[in-house]
Length: 189
Image (tube, rainbow, N blue to C red; front, side):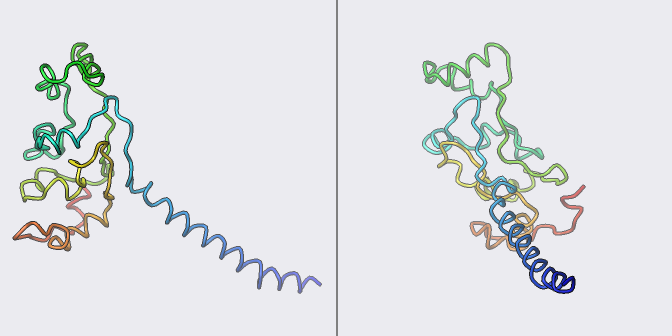
């Protein structure tokens, strides 16, 4: 009797349990990928700001607001002063501009929520990429068509290496493209 129960456990229960665990892991890994990679992340911001209007219809260059990308490692999240360059005159009666003006008059920083973020253990330099002619859209998507900005591409090691290894595929608009570095210390410092 004991032998039959043990045989049943080893032949049926154990493989079935392992199968269920493996399938659960694979499904969880697959369905949570976007969340892990932050693809689709679009937090509600303190002020509703339309990139579709500003970058799209009005054709304001990314670098007007996100200063320093040609010289610095990070693209700066715009300060209220940059917004007020236009909005001390333009559309001052709109509810979101009234909120913006209050931040400005009170001397407060707008608590924007960061959308595009690479892991803290990885090093990325915006200026190197921008100065090589790589468009913002290559990583951030077609922001000028986004009413609310969201992360559309994963900022993972795989995504970066894919572009570094096959830049002609990922950056077809560039005529001469060099391969990006693939050695570990280029990004892990």
